[in-house]
Length: 96
View 1 (spheres, one colour):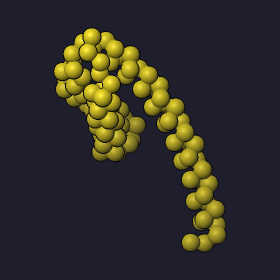
View 2 (view 1 turned 60 degrees about the vertical axis):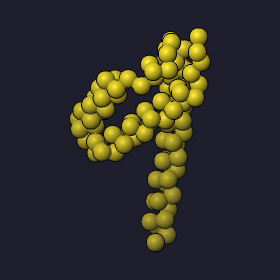
View 3 (view 1 turned 90 degrees about the horizontal axis):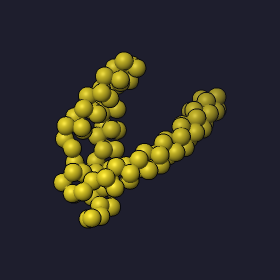
View 4 (view 1 turned 120 degrees about the horizontal axis):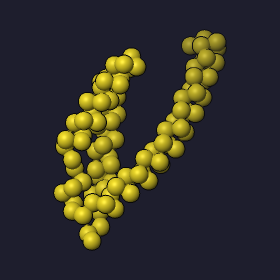
């Protein structure tokens, strides 16, 4: 790789690192909201809501297409995020 390309690559990576820091802050906010939702659930079987999951993924696909983002990328990201939060809720569920 030429020195010029390496310099450009490093600049892009710095921007990606800044974006990653923004994602971390958003994930923290999302986690706080998920904790609030979890406190409202009375039974462990309320954690997984297939209708809501399908709705979220459908909306993400529409928004991805509208914003010219490959919907396969966003589908995979959201699906994995949903699964991670389901796991989080199951680990943190407290019977009342």
